[in-house]
Length: 301
Image (cartoon, rainbow, N blue to C red; front, top):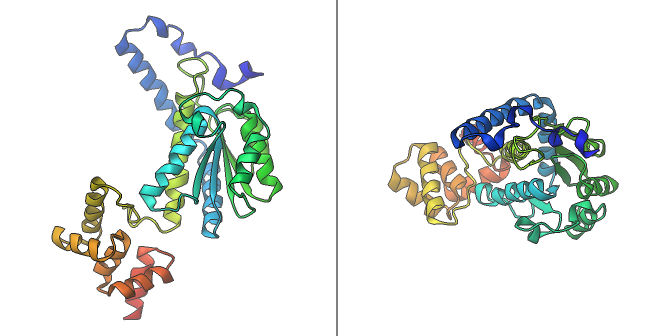
C-alpha cells in the first residue's frame, strides 16, 4: 500500500541525485520546490472552505487543534506556537498536538504515530468540545494517530479538516473539509519533510494568518496585535504604530507606552483622536477590528 502513494514513489528527474555537483543539486531541488506553489494553488477552493469554517469556529469561541506525527506534527506545533507572539492569542486558542508529545519534537517516539487511540487521549486531555475544530496533518494521508483523532473529534461534534499530500487520501474520508496537495514524488524518495512538508507549511501559513485576519488581528497588512515580548518586537510595535498612523517616532513611543503597550489601542487613539478609555470601548464594541472602530468613531461624531 505504501509504495502506491505519490509521496513514496521515485522521482524520475532525480535518479542521479548522488552523482550531481552541489550546484546542480541545488538547482534541481529549487526547480522541484517551485512545483509546490502550483500544487497548492490548485487546491484554492478546498483551502478557502477549510479556513472559512476554522474562522467561524474561532469567532464563536471555539479552538483550533492541529494533530499530526513526525514532520507534519512538528509543523502544526510550530504554527500554533507562532500565533501567540504574532497575534497575542491565548495559548489555548490554537494548539499543536504531535504523536509522542513534546519529546517527539526532537526525537522519534517509537510507535506513537501508529496508535489509533493516542490522539483521542491527547484531545481528551485538552478538553475537546463540539465548539472546536481539529485539523489533521499527514503527508501520506494515512497516519493512524491522525485518523484516530479525527474520528474522536467527530464523535464529540467538533468540526474536522485534513491536509495531506496524496490524492484520495484515507484521512480525507474522516474530515469535513479535506485538502489534498499532490506535489509529486520527493527529490529524496519518501522524504516527506521536503516538498510535502513545504506544501503543508504553506497551507498552515494561510490557515492561521487568514483566520487571524478574520478575527480582527490585522489592520491593513500590519500585525496590530503583536505581543512585544523582547526588544525587537518592541521596536516592531512602535514601527507598526508609525506605519498605521503616520505618527512620529516620539509620538509612537509615547502612545505605545501610554496604551499599556497595546499596539491596536495606540493606533485607534491616534487615528480617532479619542481617549484611552473611549478607544478601548470602540475596540470592544467592534470585536477588536481597527477599521470598524474607526468607522464607529466617525459615525459618533
